Image 1 (cartoon, rainbow, N blue to C red):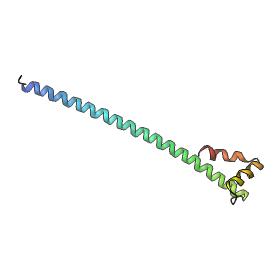
Image 2 (cartoon, rainbow, N blue to C red; image 1 turned 180 degrees about the vertical axis):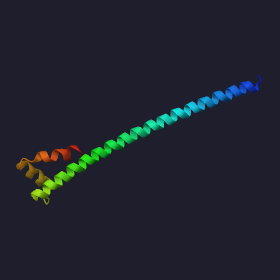
Image 3 (cartoon, rainbow, N blue to C red; image 1 turned 90 degrees about the vertical axis):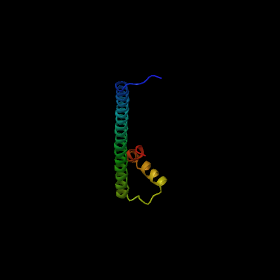
Image 4 (cartoon, rainbow, N blue to C red; image 1 turned 135 degrees about the horizontal axis):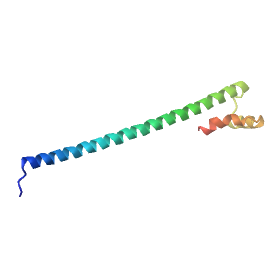
Length: 96
């Protein structure tokens, strides 16, 4: 069995440390990328929810203005179709 000199051991230790630091840097970069992706996803969700909520509020305002809030969903759709106002539902339905 060959004896390792202290210089050789130092070199091996430095090489192992370098590899460990590179692995940690890669892991940190991957974590940062996942965090950015999650933040992007969260922002998209907030925007979609905001659009959905805005559509819902507009629909509620329309229904209150027409005093049809007591109608069932089917009666409401029939009412909107009869009055050619179904387009008001498009923003609401597209966010569902």
